[in-house]
Image: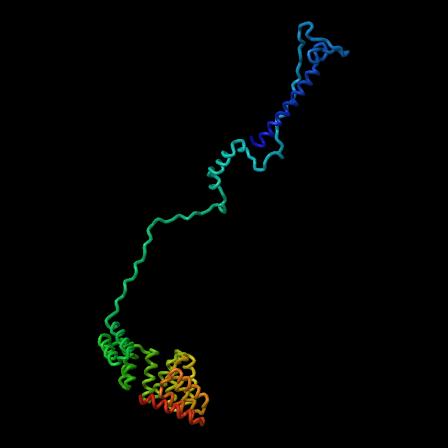
Length: 340
């Protein structure tokens, strides 16, 4: 039995006891027909004398006054704050009504509702992988020519480049690379023709312009070389090859002071370029910056320890600095490398 059930039972007992007491008191105070009240089985006259009601064998008529019975109540202090009319049912029934009642969710405010996304059961299509593109015949040959050149077989590389151009005359990369190999072989005019053709296909190609400027410099066509290289620098101010080659053009023209900033910039952009240090050392020696020239040659020698040209340049600077022993050593090393 619950706590509240026990309290109700005790309240009923107290009420029954009080009611029985009130009825007994009414019986005792009820007057008889002759104006005497009864007390148990006896009557009392007005003088207080007692008479036995059973002596004559007749029971007097008794008039009962109906008592006002108050309804049983529970004070509000005894009600639990969560008590509702449904508490008359069993606790499990009340809980079941709350859980099973659809109105709890259907009529909930929008902020309480939870949206459960529906899962799509439709199959997901996977995009097919693109089919590998087979390289063309000229691309296969182009790669073979580069591999031959990397292996040091220049003649074979040049032959393969020409095969590429027979298949695709507009293959600019193959024609540009062939021109570089022709330049290395001393065939400057033929190299220049190949580069001119490249520019007819791709006008303004910066790599081709730099290469043509270098070839024009080799042909002592300095103004044309300067034109191509400056065109590149206007479009690409940090083009390493353009700075290096225009520095060489200025050096060949004897414009040493103008060569120095371009050679220094080439070194800043590519600190590992040994020949940029060499030409910088040569230019600084010409403008009588002997400590700067020696430093540039020494750095070039660190990058190319077996370069006879670099060692000879260091010997010249040591001579000018009145260090003959060191100069003789550099000349001897340069000569030994050349005679190998």
